[in-house]
Image (cartoon, rainbow over all chains, first blue to last red; front, side, top):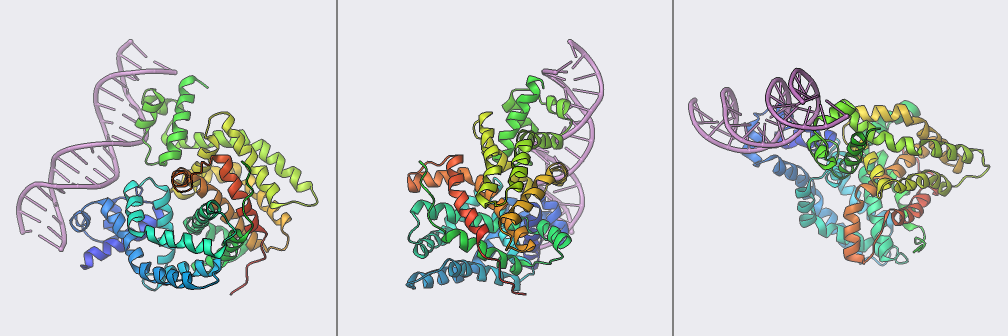
Length: 211
Length: 211
DNA sequence: GTCTATAATGGGATAGAC
DNA sequence: GTCTATCCCATTATAGAC
């Protein structure tokens, strides 16, 4: 990968995470990356392709590790929610080795992929990395066999929602937390707050059937 | 309010919820509302003001009720998380009386306000309806006095995040749920899944101090 | 591979007739 | 209050020189 191509990716990663896809113009990306405007189209083809490349780089970095950890857990006789979350989050946190805040950027981008109407991106991710979601689902069921398929389905998505949403608003919340509570919370600190919150919500008894 | 002014609001509400603020053009809004393009600027001044008006209408409809219910709960000797959530969600659900899916649209718009970089909107909401968040915070503390201020702060935001995120992705999840589980879930059904998830996560023991 | 210049499109906003 | 026509701006994308 040429230096230019990588500079674009690095700048786009931060800007997309901070401002969203459609709010971030190629002009801004290229000016932050200090490359020529035409370079994005030359190296990536289009803005859509750049968006996919930014998110794909993250998945490529964690895919094999997460997949392998999930497979290991599936062979255990007892699996806890905490183990599943850690199998996912530890590789994500290790992204910070490349760039500070990479882990947070990744989660925020996932949130944006989920809520912004980037149809091409959802298809791309479902196609390429849907297998991770399938394994995640199976593990949660294994960890809590009392839950119905429906309960597992909904809670899993609530859980992912909580995760990515927490990261999406993390900067704003961090500022408020520092002002109101005199507390500085980095990505790992945030996860320390999240894990008990999420494990509790997954382990509770099944939803009452009200229909 | 003139018929035109209201038609714009109704169209904008749905489109903003579905596609986001910046992805929804005034041209699309006015064509769906079947009014002239210039009418938005005539009646609302600008697109920003229209965005605020759309969200403000929801808050005006629920503000007094929620505020009153919160005050009533604050006077009880014992408060549960479930009661707090219901004090918030019942008025929200009653929005469906005006238009079907209003409640879901409202929550999705809140999510977009939270994640899209609409600085003006966050200021507007914090200014006008911040008091609701303050009361919510006090109630959660009252319901679970064992939690530190920090725990309450973070869990409250996780909880709100889960709520709005669940609604943001609701349409997509609904489709998957129908295909995979043969289950149709409306807004009230979604809330039935959400409440045990959230109450459990709020009631669990405090986060371990790892610092 | 990099750059300048420009095409092509779509956006928000507004002036002025009715 | 409503409409048409238009202005002005920002965007993505590309053609063509270097």
